[in-house]
Each structure stands twice: as C-alpha cells, then as structure tokens.
Length: 543
Image 1 (cartoon, one colour):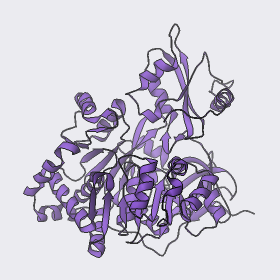
Image 2: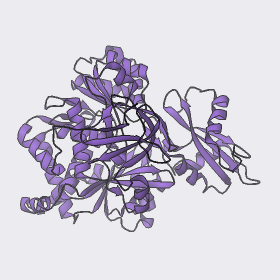
Image 3: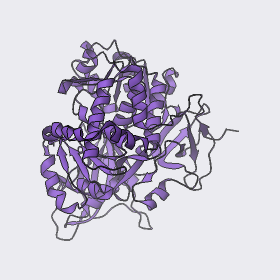
C-alpha cells in the first residue's frame, strides 16, 4: 500500500523570529565591509554598511513625509538600486510596500492604487515606451487616497534630504514598535474571477522564505547572486534580495529588465556564483551568440522557477553554463513564494523531472480536489501547502481569502501534482485555468472580463496555446454581438494601453459559438484541441 502524499519539512535550523530590518542590521554587523548591492547599469555599488546607511536615510525621509506604520507605499519601477533601498526602508518603518507591476497600464494601475488604499507612490519616470508620470496623472482623479507621487529620476535626492529633520532616536522608536507578524508587503496576483487580488505578506513570511532558499543554495558572504528577474515579483525580492541579505551575499542586478547579452556579461564581469531566471531567460542566454565565449567558471548554483522547465534546458544550463548545483523552485505569491525546491546534491533525475522536495518548516499534501482526502503517493490531486509561508490573506478581501485558505490554514494552490515515495513533487497540470507565459502568471478570466467591456463583444473565452518561446501564449475566442465587426487588429488595439502587454492575446479567433457540453458549460479543452490543430504550434514572432 502506498504511503499518504504528505510531507513535513522538519529542520534543525530554526525560523527567524525578527523583522526584516533587525535581520539586515545583524548582517551589517557581521559583514559590513562586504559588497551588498551592485547595479552595473547605474554604476552603483554599496557595501552592507553603505546599504544600511542608504535605507536609514530613506526610512527617515518616509517618517518626515508622515508615513505611519501600516501605511501603503507603492513602488512602480523596473529593477534599479533604489528598488532594493526602498524595500528595506519601508520594512524598517513598518510601511506596507505595494509592488506595482512595471507592465501595468491604466486600468490595472487604477485598481492597485484604489484596492490597496495607497497613499504614497514612488515611481520611475518611464519604462520602455510607457510614460509612468502621464499615466499617474491620468488615473489620479479616480484615486482619492493617492497623495504624493515621487519620481525617482527627479526627486530622489530631494526626498532623502527631507529625512535630515528626523533623528536616529525617532527611527529607532518606530523600529522598536514593529512585530515580525506585521503585514509588510502587498503583491497583486491576477484573479481567476476578475481583478487582481493583493496577497498580503508579513516580515515572517518573506524573510524566512528568502532565508530558507539561501540555506538550500548554501549561500554565504562569498556568494554573488545575479538577479535579472524582476524585483516586483517574489522571485526577485524574496528568493533574490532576502536570500542574499540574510546570508551576507551580494545582490547583482544586471539592468532594469532582462537582456540575455547583458546578463551574460554581468555574470562574467562580476564573477557571479549564482544565477536566477525563468526557463525562457535561460533559453535566451543559451541561444545568445556570446554564450559559448562567456566565462561561467565562477557559477556553481542558481534558481530556475516561474514555469515548468524543459528537461533538456535544465541539462544544458548545468553543462554549458557551469551550474552543476542549479535548483528548481515551486511556489506562488500567496506562499511567499517557495513551497518545494530541489537540493543542490539531489540526484540528477530528481532535479530535472520534479520541482523538488518540501521546504524547511513547510507542510505539503496532495488531496482529492473534490473531497479533500489525502491521496496515496503517485496519485494526481491538488497540491496544498501549510506553514509560516502562507500569506496573511488577500488585502481587504475576506471572501477570496476564505476560498483559498481552508479552516486548517492549508493554502489550496489550484495546481495538480503528484508526490513520489521519496516526497518529491511533480506538477502535472492546473485546476485553475492559468496560463504561464514566460514566467508571467496570466488568468484568462481577467482578460475575459476586460474584453467584455468592448461594446461589440458578446462573449469571450481565453485559453493558453503552446509556444516554443514562452511555453504558452494567450489566445482569445471572441463572439461578436449582432452586426458588430470585429477582427484581430481592432481587438488588439482595444487592449493596448489598457492591460499589460504580456496579457494581450497573441492569437484571436472570431466565432459564432463555443464548444459546449449538453448542460451549457464551455469546453475549453476542446477549444485547445481546435486551436492546436489550426495553429500547428507556430514559431513565435512577438517579443
């Protein structure tokens, strides 16, 4: 008889019972002279002592601006050194950092600002072709709680100067009043039933998850971690920043956004020992003309996460990029994020065919999606996780929280998984109809709800279709209203500047009706079959 598919990550290493600020302070005391943060594109370098001083200056500036414990402070920026300083400074004053996706357009920005009740927004002037300042001006009349908007490119030095009126004693008093279970971060995850929900995370959630990731990777103060993944994701700010600072390792951010050549050059120039990325990032680096001439000799480990990793890609990363100890992580924003991770010394088969074993101090089980019964090992069911890492809840949304976290504090992931007799987990599908495009989680319902706002759309159904480049691409089937004239160009133009580019369907199909069951339920599996036959798994043209 097979054992039950339940594991507990027992560990001799205790959880950290401290705030993020206290943890950083301990690291500074231990390795203050070592480099903490390097941003080559900005010509910025800081030791741990210098990073501490930078976060102190900004924390005082936030106090001078009247930020009180529990206030929501938004950050809308691609990867820059200021992002890291803001992450730690907000934690030190007890503000709740609201991560705003750099790809957001007006509709998503308006929702995040209003749903979080955000008062202060720190932002870049622009990102790629998007003018952030103009977008904030456009939504400001609809966002009554929004006060100051501080543009990093223009106002950073002036903001820091404001902190001169705040004493060390003022800051120390604020820090002394904080608790590690306080909410410290809101990250918006696309909703299955409409607008994104704000996963609310505490010091304890994300500090311990970052620390545990660093422990699994064997980080020490000699490690230099290349983080080309976005800081606004848990991948960047937790598996990246907090894993580093809790161990005294150095955060190296190659640029504002991922560029394969720039990342390769940074790994070599900065002698990085660890490299992060979603599978599409590693594929781009492997395919880059500089890959075979890049000196990877300093690398030993790293993290691949965000979407399923092809076995062949994993093998090439290990061999061609000199990453014999590369690991796979699995998780979700709501679990801070990592629940399972392969170990650096796992057998090769486990590292290339599973998402690893349970994380320290975390429980995982596989249950029957219908009845909740724990299944035997080897059977397919829903993956649930429990422990310190489970979010406090969705911000101001008790109903959504109750639907995700049951009475036993188990987080229901919506992912279909199996567990082998050794406790290693494999993800085999998704209960939630989620699309993972190049590491971005896209929920069809959110796009469908937006398409419904088009005056000519009677109904819309969104599915994921295979993509060689991104793993999956977005396809929308649209049923027009009578007499409405719709085509792909019209619908794409409707989406542009309203929803993030990665959510805009790559493929469109105008239909009179959808495949349905006799009871009237739309058969998305049938839509995928039709799409696969018609598209023939084409090569991608869109970047």
